[in-house]
Length: 157
Image (cartoon, rainbow, N blue to C red):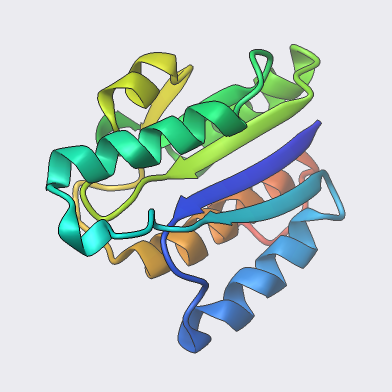
Protein backbone atom coordinates (compact mmCIF):
# COMPACT_ATOMS: atom_id res chain seq x y z
CA UNK A 1 0.00 0.00 0.00
CA UNK A 2 1.14 3.52 -0.73
CA UNK A 3 0.38 6.37 1.65
CA UNK A 4 -0.06 9.77 0.08
CA UNK A 5 -0.34 13.07 1.89
CA UNK A 6 -2.14 15.75 -0.10
CA UNK A 7 -2.26 19.34 1.08
CA UNK A 8 -3.71 22.39 -0.63
CA UNK A 9 -1.47 25.42 -0.27
CA UNK A 10 2.09 26.62 -0.48
CA UNK A 11 5.23 24.53 -0.18
CA UNK A 12 6.39 23.76 3.34
CA UNK A 13 7.82 26.65 5.31
CA UNK A 14 11.40 26.19 6.45
CA UNK A 15 10.37 25.71 10.07
CA UNK A 16 8.25 22.67 9.05
CA UNK A 17 10.12 21.29 6.05
CA UNK A 18 12.88 19.45 7.90
CA UNK A 19 10.47 17.70 10.27
CA UNK A 20 8.07 16.68 7.50
CA UNK A 21 10.95 15.31 5.44
CA UNK A 22 12.35 13.41 8.43
CA UNK A 23 9.06 11.71 9.33
CA UNK A 24 8.32 11.00 5.67
CA UNK A 25 11.69 9.26 5.36
CA UNK A 26 10.89 7.23 8.47
CA UNK A 27 7.45 6.22 7.15
CA UNK A 28 9.12 4.98 3.93
CA UNK A 29 10.62 2.10 5.95
CA UNK A 30 7.08 0.73 6.33
CA UNK A 31 5.08 1.98 3.33
CA UNK A 32 5.70 3.73 0.05
CA UNK A 33 4.94 7.35 0.84
CA UNK A 34 4.60 10.59 -1.09
CA UNK A 35 3.59 14.21 -0.53
CA UNK A 36 1.59 16.21 -3.07
CA UNK A 37 1.19 19.90 -2.42
CA UNK A 38 -1.76 21.03 -4.55
CA UNK A 39 -1.30 24.64 -5.58
CA UNK A 40 -3.91 27.22 -4.70
CA UNK A 41 -5.89 28.07 -7.88
CA UNK A 42 -4.79 31.06 -9.93
CA UNK A 43 -6.61 34.27 -9.03
CA UNK A 44 -7.51 32.79 -5.62
CA UNK A 45 -7.44 36.26 -4.07
CA UNK A 46 -10.19 37.35 -6.47
CA UNK A 47 -12.46 34.37 -5.69
CA UNK A 48 -15.11 34.07 -3.04
CA UNK A 49 -14.51 31.53 -0.28
CA UNK A 50 -17.13 29.22 -1.81
CA UNK A 51 -15.72 29.49 -5.36
CA UNK A 52 -12.21 28.84 -4.09
CA UNK A 53 -13.28 25.69 -2.21
CA UNK A 54 -15.18 24.51 -5.28
CA UNK A 55 -12.17 25.02 -7.58
CA UNK A 56 -9.85 23.25 -5.12
CA UNK A 57 -12.41 20.44 -4.86
CA UNK A 58 -12.55 20.01 -8.64
CA UNK A 59 -8.76 19.62 -8.74
CA UNK A 60 -8.78 17.08 -5.90
CA UNK A 61 -11.54 15.01 -7.51
CA UNK A 62 -9.65 14.99 -10.82
CA UNK A 63 -6.53 13.66 -9.10
CA UNK A 64 -8.36 10.86 -7.30
CA UNK A 65 -8.78 7.36 -8.69
CA UNK A 66 -11.97 5.47 -7.90
CA UNK A 67 -10.02 2.88 -5.88
CA UNK A 68 -8.19 5.44 -3.71
CA UNK A 69 -9.15 5.43 -0.04
CA UNK A 70 -9.61 9.08 0.87
CA UNK A 71 -9.25 10.18 4.49
CA UNK A 72 -9.93 13.91 4.85
CA UNK A 73 -8.77 15.88 7.85
CA UNK A 74 -11.76 17.80 9.14
CA UNK A 75 -12.50 19.34 12.53
CA UNK A 76 -15.89 17.58 12.56
CA UNK A 77 -14.38 14.18 11.84
CA UNK A 78 -13.79 11.26 14.16
CA UNK A 79 -10.92 11.54 16.62
CA UNK A 80 -8.55 8.59 16.91
CA UNK A 81 -5.96 7.59 19.46
CA UNK A 82 -2.50 6.72 18.16
CA UNK A 83 -3.40 3.04 18.49
CA UNK A 84 -6.67 3.74 16.67
CA UNK A 85 -4.77 5.35 13.79
CA UNK A 86 -2.47 2.32 13.63
CA UNK A 87 -5.51 0.02 13.44
CA UNK A 88 -7.05 2.27 10.77
CA UNK A 89 -3.91 2.07 8.60
CA UNK A 90 -3.63 -1.69 9.14
CA UNK A 91 -7.28 -2.16 8.13
CA UNK A 92 -6.64 -0.33 4.83
CA UNK A 93 -3.59 -2.54 4.19
CA UNK A 94 -5.66 -5.65 5.02
CA UNK A 95 -8.23 -4.50 2.46
CA UNK A 96 -5.39 -4.51 -0.11
CA UNK A 97 -5.87 -0.81 -0.81
CA UNK A 98 -3.38 0.46 -3.36
CA UNK A 99 -3.45 4.00 -1.99
CA UNK A 100 -4.44 5.61 1.26
CA UNK A 101 -4.66 9.37 0.82
CA UNK A 102 -4.72 11.78 3.74
CA UNK A 103 -6.04 15.16 2.56
CA UNK A 104 -5.46 18.51 4.23
CA UNK A 105 -7.81 21.05 2.65
CA UNK A 106 -7.23 24.68 1.80
CA UNK A 107 -7.54 27.72 4.03
CA UNK A 108 -11.35 27.59 3.96
CA UNK A 109 -11.71 23.84 4.31
CA UNK A 110 -12.80 21.12 1.92
CA UNK A 111 -15.51 21.37 -0.72
CA UNK A 112 -18.71 19.43 -0.07
CA UNK A 113 -18.23 17.29 -3.21
CA UNK A 114 -14.88 16.08 -1.82
CA UNK A 115 -16.45 15.49 1.58
CA UNK A 116 -19.08 13.28 -0.04
CA UNK A 117 -16.33 11.32 -1.85
CA UNK A 118 -14.33 10.87 1.37
CA UNK A 119 -14.18 7.37 2.81
CA UNK A 120 -13.26 8.67 6.27
CA UNK A 121 -13.30 12.03 8.04
CA UNK A 122 -10.63 12.40 10.70
CA UNK A 123 -10.14 15.15 13.26
CA UNK A 124 -6.65 15.50 14.69
CA UNK A 125 -7.98 17.61 17.55
CA UNK A 126 -10.67 20.04 18.55
CA UNK A 127 -7.92 22.66 18.43
CA UNK A 128 -7.28 24.59 15.23
CA UNK A 129 -3.73 24.38 13.84
CA UNK A 130 -2.00 26.22 11.00
CA UNK A 131 -1.93 24.06 7.85
CA UNK A 132 1.85 23.91 7.93
CA UNK A 133 1.82 22.40 11.43
CA UNK A 134 -0.93 19.95 10.46
CA UNK A 135 1.45 18.54 7.84
CA UNK A 136 4.09 17.94 10.49
CA UNK A 137 1.63 16.51 13.03
CA UNK A 138 0.12 14.23 10.38
CA UNK A 139 3.50 12.90 9.27
CA UNK A 140 4.58 12.27 12.86
CA UNK A 141 1.33 10.53 13.79
CA UNK A 142 1.45 8.24 10.75
CA UNK A 143 5.06 7.38 11.62
CA UNK A 144 3.99 6.69 15.21
CA UNK A 145 1.20 4.44 13.92
CA UNK A 146 3.73 2.50 11.82
CA UNK A 147 5.93 1.90 14.87
CA UNK A 148 2.90 0.74 16.86
CA UNK A 149 2.07 -1.78 14.11
CA UNK A 150 5.61 -3.15 14.28
CA UNK A 151 5.65 -3.04 18.11
CA UNK A 152 8.69 -0.76 18.08
CA UNK A 153 9.57 1.42 21.04
CA UNK A 154 9.02 4.92 19.56
CA UNK A 155 5.49 5.01 21.06
CA UNK A 156 5.40 4.85 24.85
CA UNK A 157 2.15 4.33 26.65
